[in-house]
Every structure is written in structure tokens, then in C-alpha cells.
Image 1 (cartoon, rainbow, N blue to C red):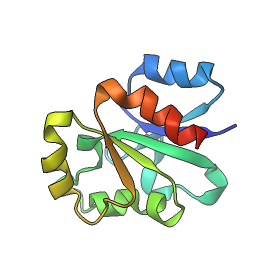
Image 2 (cartoon, rainbow, N blue to C red; image 1 turned 135 degrees about the horizontal axis):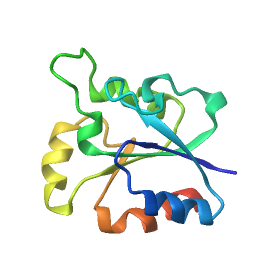
Image 3 (cartoon, one colour; image 1 turned 30 degrees about the vertical axis):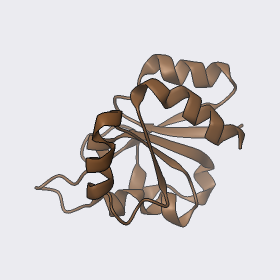
Length: 123
């Protein structure tokens, strides 16, 4: 079974659609929100096939010394695709902010989330 890691705020109905398709889900946290396993601590043994998060969840918090590069490092090092949910009209700005991570992330509009997730999981 493939496992999808998701951060707080990812739609429950979306996660239910994944579960009905036979995918497992595991909550992930950004180190500040106390939601699930700290994303920076993902290891190979977690067997996560895809990470899904909203853009704001991976941005650094000014009072917390961690960057989006830090948070997504396990995805990069373990070759786990990461879907970053961003409204389509903000893709360019998100790419500017996430420069350096383009090869490891996929920006996806909320309306296209399920189709893109299934496409990645089935590839």
C-alpha cells in the first residue's frame, strides 16, 4: 500500500477519496502546529510515497529557525514527490519563493489536487 503524508488543513474528503482508492494516509506537522509526525523527521522506514501540503505550511515561521528547504529535505533526499497546494493565480510567486526546490515539488491548484495525486501515485 502506498502512503500519503499530509499536513494539517488538507481536505478530509480528499483524504477519504485516497483511502477509498487503497492509499494509506499519515498526518505530518511542520514543527510548529503539533499535527502528526514532524515532516523533517521522515525516514525511509516511513515508506511515504507522496507528501501533500499547503504552501503556507512549509514557509518558515519568523520565530522558529527552520526554512522550507529544511522541511522538504527528506522529500528531496528520499525522492518523495511533494505536492504544494497553491491557487493557480499564485504559481509564479510561489515558484519565486520556493526557488531551488523546483525539481522536487509540484505546484497544484486545489481543484486539481486529487487528479494530480492519483497520477503521481499511479506512476
